[in-house]
Length: 442
Image (cartoon, rainbow, N blue to C red):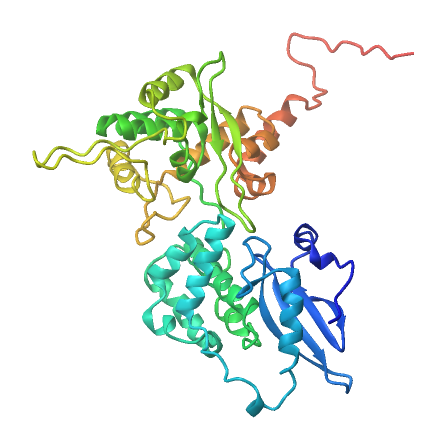
């Protein structure tokens, strides 16, 4: 049996350095058989191809590359296993349908979501993407085969999200996750010949990402923190950390006791990165400065717990049964902050005209004017107006310069105007003063 020699497809690192593309790269194995590799956003796909001797060829997806998970010689194949499988499959390629094995059961949307969830777990992605889909995709679509989906089906479903009064930005995030799930299935199922149904039916809504950031003054932020502490100490500390660091809720919930560095003159938190964005997610940690007073509070709640234990815990549940005491307080989980923060907003801004929302509510069924993201937006703008370089602001808030320029362009314009005005040439003579001659350098 022939084998491809010195192939860049044989090394995982070399394969993953290839650009993501729908077009596979093929290597000849001899006897008219080729092995192909398609670089995907997730693990790559192995493809077998066999020439028909008439200037054309047949090809078939044979498995997933062992880019991120160990090969099992089943659905996940190593380079050597893929070559062997290619020769095995090549025996049936091009034969009449009656001589080939019966076609496999079509992949349903439910199976597509299951595969998408598994892929997110492998890559360390945000499982909220698939959870959002399970919440909104109706049973009619879940039971349908991916190959039977039409652009009309998907467009009707997308427009139905508008009827649920979801924010346009939320709809785009949901449809993007749906497209990612269907594309992942198409990457590994050669029965799916076109992606036209979801590329057209799940087209993004225009102007949905227009920034509508709620920016709170320092005084308003202080009132929000005070109102949070009135509910309970645990929630107040969570909100204070959010206001000081400008981090996302998921990042704050992921802090561990070991992330607190209070034994120094400039205390800080080693903040974990979020799981937003594409590709394989590697959680990084970056130092974020915090005031000594906040570090002291965090040290007190950390106590002598292990450094891998969650730093911030939810409040203890009240005792309701003497025989069955409540469980010990656990870490903050997804949406735990939603209702308490909604009450804070109602208490602080009661009777006031509230601005438009910067982010959809966590439940994604209500359109709250102010969410926890207002603290993040306020932190970013506070640093911009304080003269902190935008690059540093981006790093401190786990985002990019491009996203800051896109979402905070107005605030950047105000800031750059103030800087430019300080250096502006004004040839008019100030009252009571004379313009001094500028000595030329020789």
